[in-house]
Length: 256
Image 1 (cartoon, rainbow, N blue to C red):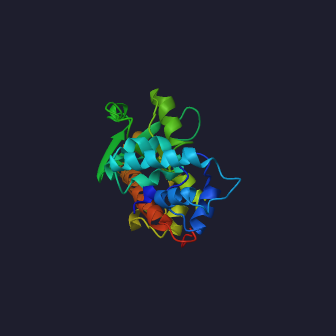
Image 2 (image 1 turned 90 degrees about the vertical axis):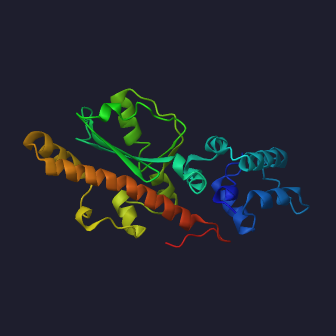
Image 3 (image 1 turned 90 degrees about the horizontal axis):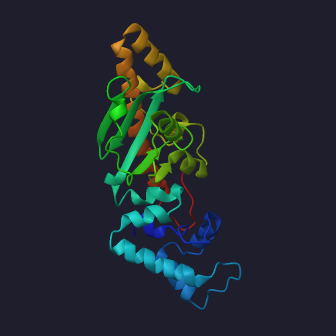
């Protein structure tokens, strides 16, 4: 049983709360939901009409068998896109940016993409403006707080539009009760960074860029790139940990 087949929220009328209630009844995947809706036990006046859901289940099963994974990127709630990772990990691209500040005149300094174990880092003044020249709009973007920061920042600076399905892990983690920023989330999830990067956070990025540009400190740039690359690698580790913790149990609880 794949995690995708256990997502009931993708069907119209089934909210996260209703999904949880179904799980508690042992209805934890598409087939069980279909059987339940067809059974004599199904008597729930407040439940959405069962016929559109049954049709949607059949459609989902057909697309699953056909491995038409792109279909599911349009059907899954964005916070549930993590379910596709075990099926198409090569279609996930982890993104993180560093900037020289947070005011309206600030700009991106370093951006890293991480896909299928390969890092691609671009630096302002070298190759940053070419990073998205061959961008694939069907890839699933993975960020932390990227919906509010990274993506709007890049779209504004480079006059781009990212139509990609977007999994913002911050929202997923908040739904699990894990808050406090990326570094704090890593601590809660027991996913430590290398010792030489511990204690460094986003507030150091502008200082490192300034040291590089004003003092020609190549070591500062190296540290900034190392920090940025660690962010995207950590995003993948967090995604895998989310998958581990969210695997269905009978009462849909998570062991924190």
